[in-house]
Image (cartoon, rainbow, N blue to C red):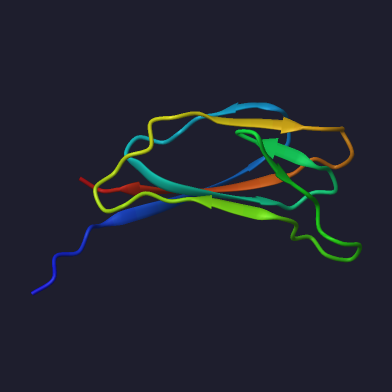
Length: 94
């Protein structure tokens, strides 16, 4: 019989540059550029969507079963033209 790892997700929207709090027991996280500004997340560039679209580039940093992310999530918007970044964190339930 398989054993399943319980988890929760948390969604937040960031509109300013800086560090984002990493939730305890964070196993993986995903970022999606939902604004009109280019944004860098931990050095990865995420471009905005095309005209008429609210979804731009996205990246996922995933962990294996039982792994916990202990790094930072650093957000740097390149301008102030409608900056908006959606962050989803998956946290393990212990």
